Amino acid sequence: MRILRIVGFVAAVLLLPILGLIAYAGWESAHMVYPSLENESTFLRAYDPKVALMPFIYEMQGYSEPGGIGGGAGTKFVTHFAHFGEYFTIRADRKDALMAAVNDNITERLRTSGARILNQSGTSSSGFHIDYESGKTIGSVAIQPLSPGSVHRNLPLPSGLEDVSLNLSVSEQWYPGGIPTGVHGFLPESDR
Image (cartoon, rainbow, N blue to C red; front, side, top):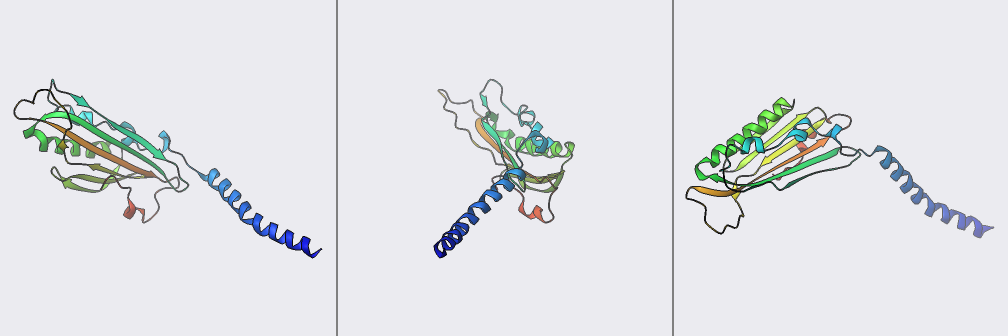
């Protein structure tokens, strides 16, 4: 009889953590929020850097736009991110104007989409960084400084032209219950 009590006690001790894990997995599954168009900001959903780039791209030369978008599920917030990598040829004397135009375009698109800019910094040579909030979303945009493009050419470019690469990242966090107080100090990183 005593052995049955000991076996029952040991079984209960071993079974209790397993039941706790099952209960937690059920709770987490029921409260998990997944990335979707409904929790992606209007800015990120509609943003396309080509609008700002096209006036600067030298005609009759190549242009490519590798990049990617994605997101992550969570119980406290959902993440959305996008990377835009643009490779093109530009007149060397227009590089600073291009960087300013991209920064101005993003600022304008954030404002017209209803976002509030929290912080904005940078220069054409160091790149730009913008933090924003929009509804239940906080986000961050990082515009890296122009870098030499990795184009392999049979013939050199005419004098005054350069192949360049522009890399831009957007990262957002959407909170189902609204942005918690104090979370602005922990804005999502966008290749800072």
